[in-house]
Amino acid sequence: MISVYRGSDYFEAQLLRDLIEQAGLQVFLHGASLQGGLGEIAVMGHLSIMVNESDQANAADIVAAYERGDFMLEGE
Image (tube, rainbow, N blue to C red; front, side):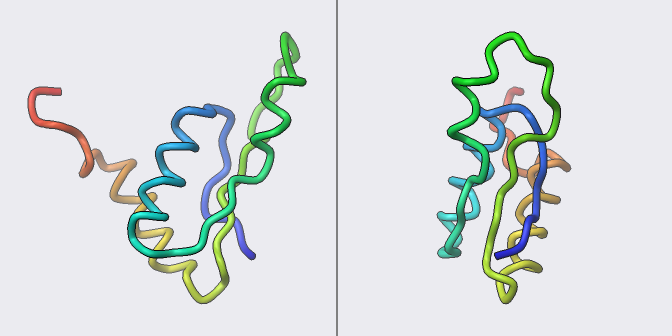
């Protein structure tokens, strides 16, 4: 598997994981189990969304569309 996203916002990573999964791609959110153990420690980039290498381009397109705001609801 290969990483298509790195960040530290658990909710954003979870949302992206769900968007990629809805596109029919196999996805794994690496580092999610660390969230509870980090507590007050300032750690950046501990979450990584992993996909199969063959799905990298499709998943990267979804991440780019999210970052452009393509998935925003009307009125936001």
